[in-house]
Length: 197
Image (spheres, rainbow, N blue to C red):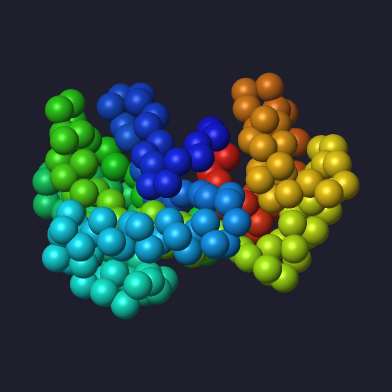
């Protein structure tokens, strides 16, 4: 699975099951992330729940606050009658995943919970995970080497966004289990996108 939108829901419907991968990505320059965070926080001033306004009051989201928002959303979903599996850390512990088992017609309750606890917190958290400066160079070099070692071609000078695109194009139904396992470690350590459903 390859999704690249901030605050997304990964929907797998089989016996009416929905998996929510609470993750997101961004691949623009650091100033773009800072500007995006500032816009999200400004929008939250009138549009976010009190819970999210409190989290965003200092202009950032700590891991503890992110985890608290996930826990609150999961609690809300459970209060709505959904069975929730998780939370489970993913992507080298930077993000948290959970799965929701629900009956037909319950989707609106999940959206209500996401809107109450995650709609502003999640995008800010995700944007904060995008490396910048020397860290971005280190991650790019290590991610590129890891992906090459896993068997994909990464051109010299590839940006993080280029590497994400290369990995995203490679991960799919035609990728063998063996090749996917080789890439899994690279994705877990370096990616800001969710390629594995």
